[in-house]
Amino acid sequence: MQKVCILGVGRQGSAAAYDILKYNKPQQLLLLDNNHDSLKRTMSKINKVKDDSTQIIAEVIDLNDSQKLSKLLTPFDIFLSAVPYQFNLQLTKVALSSKTSMVDLGGHTKNVIKQLSYDESSKNNNIAIVPDCGMGPGMNISMALLGIEYLDQAKDVYIWDGGLPKNPVKPWNYSLFFNIKGLTNEYDGSAYFIKNGKIEKILCFEEFEVVEFEDIGKLEAVVTSGGLSTMPWTFEGKLNTLSNKTLRYKGHWELMKAYRQLGLFSEKQITYNGAKFTPRDFYHFLLEPLLGSDDREDICLMRTESYGLKDGHNIGVRYEVVEEYDENTGFMAMEKWTGWHASIVMQKILDGSIKPGAHAIEKALSGKMFYDEAVKRGYNIKETILNS
Image (cartoon, rainbow, N blue to C red; front, side, top):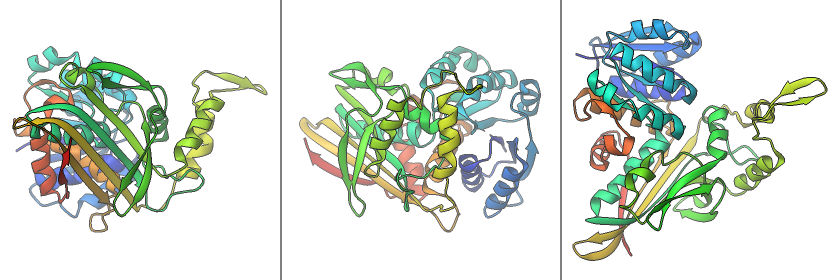
């Protein structure tokens, strides 16, 4: 029997706890957070799938106390870091010192590359470390792998994904589903794609296009940062094209581009009337409460298209899935896609499918492995063969 820890039991962490209880039933589940109310809410949610075979412990913890964390995690087989990405490098070192496997929700590719440099140390400590699980990066990459694996030789791979409110807050046509710092991090800087077989840097908000989904209508897609994680480097020289764009309702990107142009994404400290602050902090302070909503009804969409050779013919294959708020579990679509993907990776480490070492998500979890687990969870992934 296994011992599992969820570090950070906000929206995504609680969904991961629910999933691992339902499908793995560990001997012990430890919930750690710096907020007592979050622990109480999560305990209430996971009671629906709890049985007597699992002992659940909830504890308030200071994330900055690495020594205490390491001691606490030593008896455990694996933990999920569902806390802001800034902690993940520190927590990777905690994983190594406690000899506890680790999965995280990532969100910052430079951090992930540093984590992957601990591959040899992870093997020496007989643990697996898999960063960048979740919806994107994470599930979007797993969905892309489905298409790559379907073809004998994939050449061009395109990904579109997004989490949207069913009832968007105007004028932004969006609602906040996760930490606003993470959102701005996705909207700032650049992304890395593969074009003509080589890695190319693309600025955020570039390559605008309109994408249509059945029953939803036309959405707008642009480049945002970090969605592909390390996948471009893994597939450089193997694919001719690899891209990933984020979907939003009409008008959202126009406003965000204006905010960035105004300088509100800047992290350079300024002084105004004697007060020192960064424009980004000020922007977050003003916007976060306006984007917050008690309405939990959301919708997540994902589409991948892969083109290449199969049985000597040029063809394409599309995989598409849509998820909505789940009244039965109380989880939002984004919570499920994020937390459950991370939980699937954890369970594949626990059952030995993912071996010791520090692994990029595109190397750790195959498309087929993900698909089989997704079907168990009721995901309706549609496959369509396309003319190339």
